Length: 262
Ligand code: HEC
Image (cartoon, rainbow, N blue to C red; front, side, top):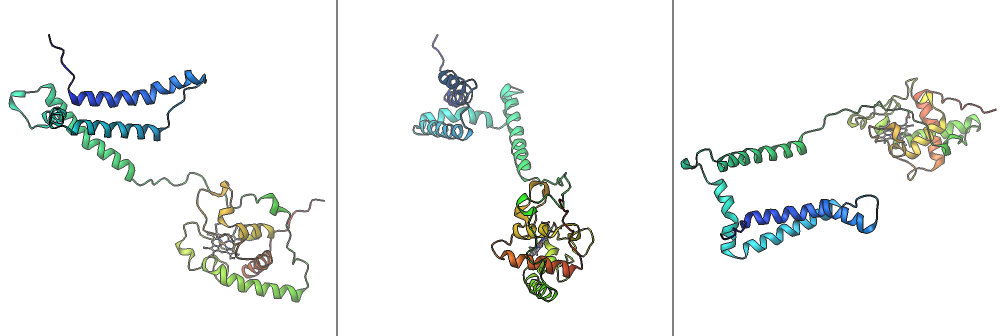
């Protein structure tokens, strides 16, 4: 009895599957044994993808360079997909065709849905409005705290100009958070006239927030991203301190007094 050769289609499928099994399961344990490691050494997924792509391209070249081979390769595919054959009845092939033709659109639909469905989960954590400031800012004090009244008024005026130029678009002319740009922000700037906002933090806290902006916030202030820009490259420390003084003056609030450590 002559031995029947496996059809070309199935030998290609089996070859690809064996190479995958080798890369994904055999190789990691072989490598573990050779290297004397305690754990399996998996082949990176990107590398498996490259090897599999090469395997498939190689198989397709082998199949398509000869007309007879191409016909032999496509034969089972064509036979499976060919229309309903009455004589066939409910043969295994008819069932397989139904299964393939049903499963394929479902699979494509599932993958597309998974990739395209919007993720509407809202952040499950509440944002911490005032996370702890970094240590290096904690002991900073306003260098202009002890100037005389006239100088203080002059600095506040300078700070007000800087504030109206740089901060007004978001924080509003009156520091009430009603700037024209604030409307477009999901996380809006707070109303600094409100007693619960900058009135509850020390001046160095405001200094930190202005200098480092949203980017300088620790993870605790997530999950919403803050649009507050970092000003350290734009403004000098002196300018920022003047803006801090102006900001409190505009909002009509007093900064919290730092706790004394005596
Ligand atoms: C692009 C819009 C935008 C601009 C411009 C902007 N800010 Fe902000 N700022 C925000 C937003 C939004 C927040 C609230 C989210 C946060 O705490 O980061 C904020 C927060 C702050 C806070 C922290 C308040 C608190 O209670 O912790 C301070 C202080 C502040 N801004 C000052 C300023 C100053 C001063 C300027 C100008 C030099 C300025 N901001 C420019 C958007 C802006």
